[in-house]
Image 1 (cartoon, rainbow, N blue to C red):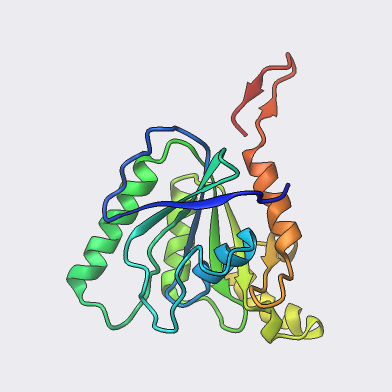
Image 2 (cartoon, one colour):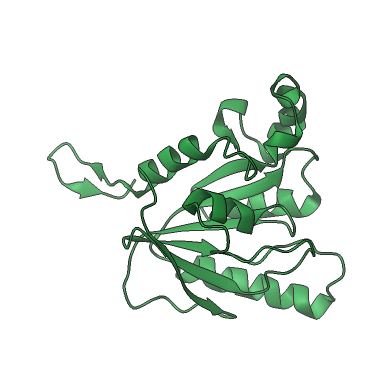
Length: 204
């Protein structure tokens, strides 16, 4: 799989399903974990998703159309300490509204920073996805900041906190593209219907 086209569709403060009901891949993670940078590297478009050095920049649900056959949904970053309780409540309602109504969701990319142990917000997000039965893939961003020899040391606490095995985690770097091919393979698998024994497609 390769991304041959990518376009920004819209931003919304409350999820409204697009008229064209295509499969969806969502991206979630704490503020400043590198969601926008991952999207830009994945699509090989430097300014497709807006990046910022200021945490908490993404406060809306951003919708992108990739290859004209599936949506990539960039969800607001969580865990930004400087937002008030009302803003956190609004964020929670926005997230609930998305996950309750995104019937076409195939996979959620749960981004965490490989350099740090998961925060309580990361653990809560992971538990939320599990409780709702939402397929997810843990993606450890900023892998270029850690040598390959030291990765397992950093992955161990992440795997314990998020209850996954090391081989179930994908390391990704928006700087050098490390992990991009593996991520594309994961997206292709999630977007490809599984066939029944009678040859009919079914949900994976």
